[in-house]
Amino acid sequence: MFLKNLKAYVEMCSQNSEIRLSELQKEEITNHLLKSHEFVLFVIRCYLHLIGAISLAFFQSHFYNLNYSNRLKIRNYFKIFNSALWFIDNLFHVIISTHKFGNENIHRIKSLESNSSALENDDFFEFLVIGSGPAGSVTAAKISEQYPGNVALLERGKHFSIPENKHPGEEFSKKWENGGILSTFGPEIISFASGNCLGGGSEINSGLFHEPDEKFFKSWSDTYGTRNLTIETVKPYLKEVKQITNVDQNSDFVNFENTFISTAEKMGLSWDKLHRFMNDTAPQSRKSMTQTYLKIVVQNSGKIFTNTNAKKIVFKKGLWKVKVDQNGVNKIIYCKNLFLCCGALHTNSLLLKSPVSKGMRKTIRKFYLHPMLKVLAKYPDNIQKMNSDITPLQITEYYPNFIIGNAASSLQFQLMPFHNKKDLTKLIKEHCKNAIVFHTTFSLGVGKIYNIPFIKDAIPMYFLRKSEKDRINTGFQKLFTFIKKSGAEYLIPLTKSTEKPIYLTKQQADKADYQNFNGHNLSSVHIMGGVTSGENKGCVVDSYGQFHKHENLFVNDSSLINTKLLKNPQGTVLTIALRNIDYFLKNYN
Image (cartoon, rainbow, N blue to C red; front, side, top):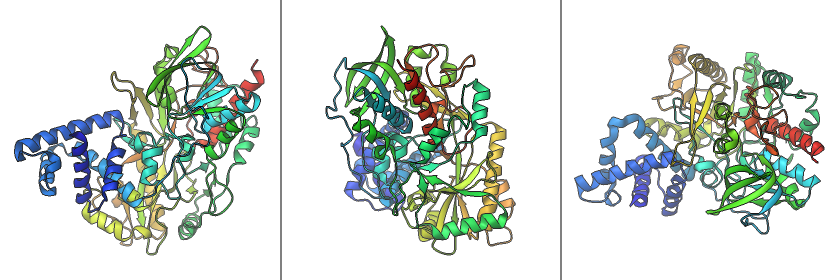
């Protein structure tokens, strides 16, 4: 019953958005929605059960048997719950759009996985790494080089191909955690991204390389008493990271890049073109972890187990006991040295469920995002190709308060918050190739993780102070001015409160158009923090990631970054992970 009603609601939403779907696409979208966060799925179930009951009461028929008109009548009964209804309908609209306008198949790959692929109860490993993102891949690779055949790596997701297009629907469904349907649950609702595949975030992100600076390391060291953490001490590791980056060769944005650079120079703004984790050939291919460090693990006889979720860790009789779920089967395995590299939120959540976090839970439950607001700008001429990548140009003039850059700009991303704005949707569809999405990104706020009984997924909350919201509005104003100076005809803030474009060619398009603007829809692609690293009292781990209170337990991922970074963290995460594992190997007996 629930699945039939879910599919019927997909059909209704697609008809309402004037999007035609094949039966196969309806099935794909329905299955995608079933991967939602457990709490989100609970809300959808309750809503559809209520709709089903009303359908039987008023029409003496199941909701899935009704025609479009009657389905819409029932849906409209819930208009009194406008905000909640908007979020549900917009969720369906976003998933429908990603599959319709970003249609590309990705396929399963097994070449890097362990030949045995199945763990056995009581399996023992000298070194066990949980998580295969940038930090986990580096950690396992370096251990495997010194101790061939003695390291195992666990990954919750599976290994899939990297798509040619930017974020097709199947990538969200198969490679993103919860199918990409992730957000904080208040008081600030911020959607965010997390990888759930072999290679982690490196397989789904844009691969931008921001080089960390001395100020960042000094702030980290001063705050937490971290030893030997300076730009000089990390230079060897930073050099290794740079070797897998290159200058972007993407030619799909030549017109936009020329406009971006000329506007920045005309306004006297500092800008940068970032290196990326890409090969130096055109068309470029990504240098993700499955293409780099995970191959080293396999070459050195390391074992990689996918579809394996670590659920709990306990220290027992000098060994780490790890409860895992592999392919739906619970198993217990053991190791001598345990490295948590699951990424912020997941490492934190795993620690919070374990006795090892006693006395440190208040710190560990924290996390930090880089909130980002987005604006669509329309130009007189074609400025992009659909489903192409981004350009790595950024305005750095306002750093460290915020940066301005380009976000994914295909049609599905232009339409995201406008499922109930038909005139706006029509306008965007007509001019999608003449439009580009800008972002302004900040390092603001703090999150907290809550674990609720009977809900396996952690509940993340996020908090912004009024002064931080004021800074977001300032960033929007600066972005408004940049877009106006760049020759755009109009802009559309990508937020549910937008009713019409802000036209920039008229004299009245001035500060009044944005000073009173509110209701930004925020998103984020960077998650950090929670595990403080240093020698000061209260730090969870020492200067190199080893737990202060427990032997042979290490954290080596983005949860170590508790200092404001703002920059894309992948390069910093790799650099710190290389530093920490090098120290461990030099001192391991």
